[in-house]
Image (cartoon, rainbow, N blue to C red; front, side):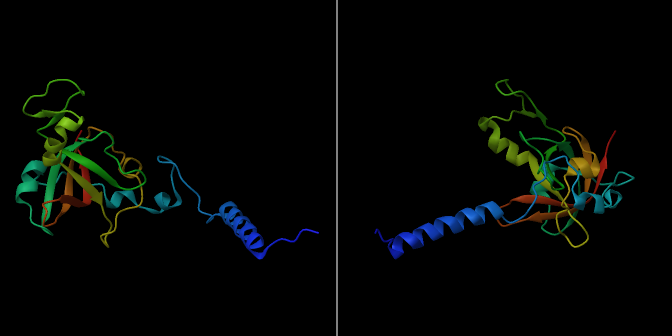
Length: 182
């Protein structure tokens, strides 16, 4: 009669346990972007949609140079400047300075134009910023900005909020409200 070693029995137990854990998982449902989540239905979009355009808007390029960390700021720009300007499932997007335009990859670009190829990466960094729409506690709103605010790529928007800048010069806009120009 063949006996099973304790090492073999232990190994078999670990494999079975791993399979059981993988099957059970953590019971979290995944949601696809664009599908309303239960959180989306609990978020009042009107809290973040501005009825009137705020005064004193500056472009992304000027804000990168002059904005102070924690200071109130109003930005104007177009949604875009990257191949994927959206943060799926979150109220955040890339904002391109309104003076700039994106051209097709491979086309020659003028002084106020850039492409999405690697050759323009440093230029894009100088004229784009990440906009995070935040709630009253300063937390990122957990709803896709396209769903929450009805935003589309290339929309010209005016964003009101606070500048967030670090020692390295990285610049992020913490938005309290967004106005879409028609």
